[in-house]
Image (tube, rainbow, N blue to C red; front, side, top):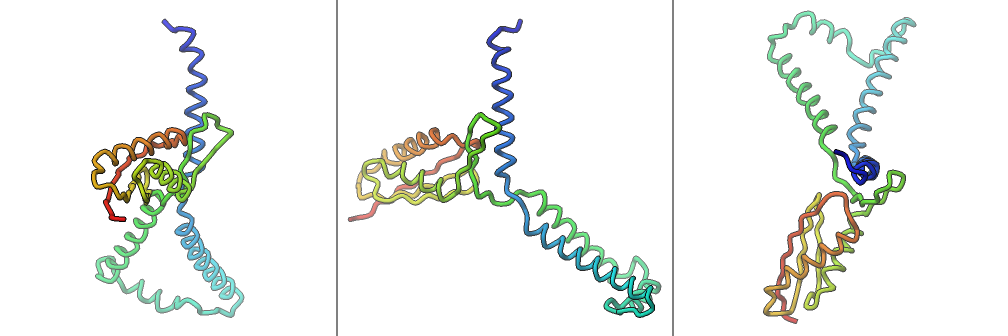
Length: 201
């Protein structure tokens, strides 16, 4: 049996899922440089090949590409030749590397925040996230300095204190950072690791 609350809650849940998909897609890191380099190489090869064909048809070949020696080599070489096998392996490795580079996401520069509205997307840069977390850590009494490192969904917080007995300090810093993250509401949950080092003033 379906209740009225379940029926009314479904549109809200669908909007929340759509907002999350939009935010993730908007701040997904792109592999632009490999695509640009590959495109330029293919464009250069295509332009040279087209210029060679047009010049040959006009009766004045450019001879930018040694077509004659390449044709002679191709007609006298079999697929079992070591040079052919090595060249094929190198091309296969290059193709595999390009596929891996295209599939593996790049390093994200933004942390998507929850908005519950597909038309409103908010992101926080890594430096801004580090500053927010560092400020939350330094709100704890006894913390003199906090250095934050962000890697993916991991936060490493290195705290410097002058307190000799700082056994409860890591827990306090972690709770303060968790509270700040709850206010920011990132889409991905973040793992927090806190390290405390004692320094004499």
